[in-house]
Length: 125
Image (cartoon, rainbow, N blue to C red; front, side):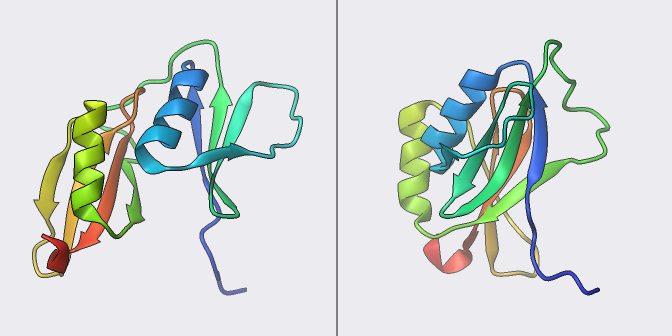
C-alpha cells in the first residue's frame, strides 16, 4: 500500500468567508464542490484537486507558538509576479533561500495566522 499522492489539508476557522477570499486572491485557489456535511465549510481547489478543506467553527482555533502542524507549502513559478501580487494585496512576506537546495521560499500567513510558504526555483530570483 504505497502512498501515491497528497490529498488535502483540513483547516478549522471561525473566519470562513475571509479565508475563502484570501486563498482565492492570494494563492489563486477557487471554491468548488463540497459534500453537504451539515456544518459550514468550503473546499478550495487547485485545478481539479480540492487541496484545502476549510471547516467553519464558532471559536477561533489557536495558531502560532508550538503547534504540531507548522506550515503547508506549495511549489510555483512566477516569483516576481507573485511578489507583486502580495505587495498589491498588502500581504507581508518573508523571503528565505533554502540552504543547499535551489529553492527560495516566500513565507506568508493567512488571515487566521496559518503559515504557508510558496517555493520557487532560485533561478527566478
